[in-house]
Length: 229
Ligand code: UDP
Ligand code: MG
Image 1 (cartoon, rainbow, N blue to C red):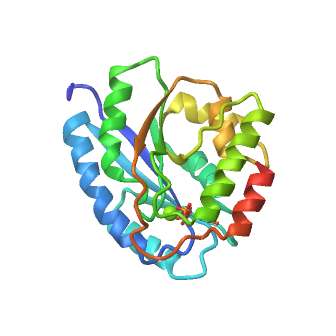
Image 2 (cartoon, protein in one colour; image 1 turned 60 degrees about the vertical axis):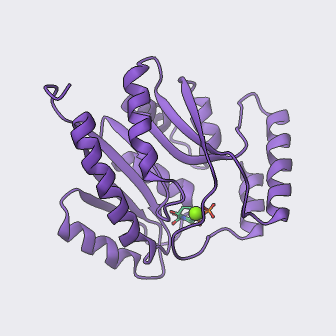
């Protein structure tokens, strides 16, 4: 296997006010990068997207970039929201494989080797997606509205929108290019990713707390997001 030329995996990470999470995320993820190199001869590049953070996120990214040539970043002048950050990150990614994951370690990078393995073993699949197996630790009101939202949207649309689906995904270049080709202004990524229609394998994991900082979602911002969706 290691006679094959090294392939590149881009890790796309949206960041809004993540100055505290970023160093922890980086430390954790480079360990996985080492593992991917030895196990699969896979190189890693980081594509961080600073989504108009008001804290020292951009300074942190500059620092990481100056220390590690694998670290690249895109920076927005203002906050455009996670969807836009993800989309820009996918556009900037150069890898044959791309994974999207949050900066707060709620999407465990330790799952990535498993995702790579799955696509290696199943060449008819183009995506490994994740969902939370529980809503543990989430405010009840949020769980309630989330459930209502999924019930409603699945009644309304032909695409299947999976409850508990996270934006933590591992994709082939083919899949990413299809998502990018959709290129619409108001993207609802949970829908777009199912819309492109390639075979997707789902894995579940337990909800975990963010490693530092706090969630960017208020009840009303989630409500607005669901209406847009
Ligand atoms: N995020 C972003 N732009 C935003 C809000 C969030 O790029 O406007 C990023 C954030 O930095 C994190 C990820 O999206 O990496 C998920 O955000 P958060 O942890 O706040 O959401 P939750 O996990 O609570 O759903
Ligand atoms: Mg989070």
